[in-house]
Amino acid sequence: IAAGFGIAWTLPNWASEHRRVLDQYIPPYSIYQRLQATLFLSTAASMMRAGITLNKVLKDANQFSSKWMRHHITKMLNELGAGHGEVNALSKGPLPNDTADTLRVYRLIPKFQDVMTRLSEANFIAYEKSIDRIASISAYFSMFLTTAFGVATTIAMFNFSDAIQAASTAVQHTAGG
Image (cartoon, rainbow, N blue to C red; front, side):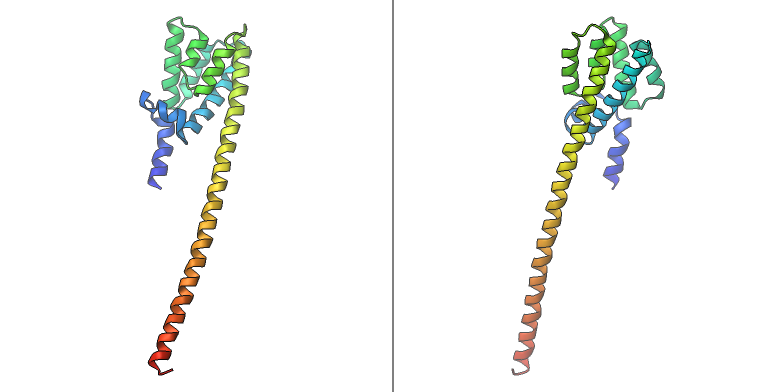
């Protein structure tokens, strides 16, 4: 239980380059990253369609974000400040590897707002697929545990029956029967 609370606390609060591997490959960190990227991309795309620049979106989001997200926003703001462009800035952000790869393909689209919208949609679909995959794994795991419990219970009943029969036989032998 303590480990669960510890992991839950680290999701929004632990921000370092060492966490990148966990974010990319290890649940629940990869799920958290995918969710945060999906929310960020959909919010940023909506704000940019309303005429707000990515720089302003990042500065506004930075005020209300978790420590983990602020870490990524700072990296994106640094990229924008260095003049590396919006696509490069996003690639330094909280995007999972597959979303970053999609960004490289979408960078050819002329309007950046359209890039953000398509990237947001693609990331949402990937998020749904990862949730479905985890649900399937959980279902198989619970079926395995239920089967294992049933087998263990059956074996225990046979052992108990054998013990009762052995005790009954021993009582009959001592009673002279």
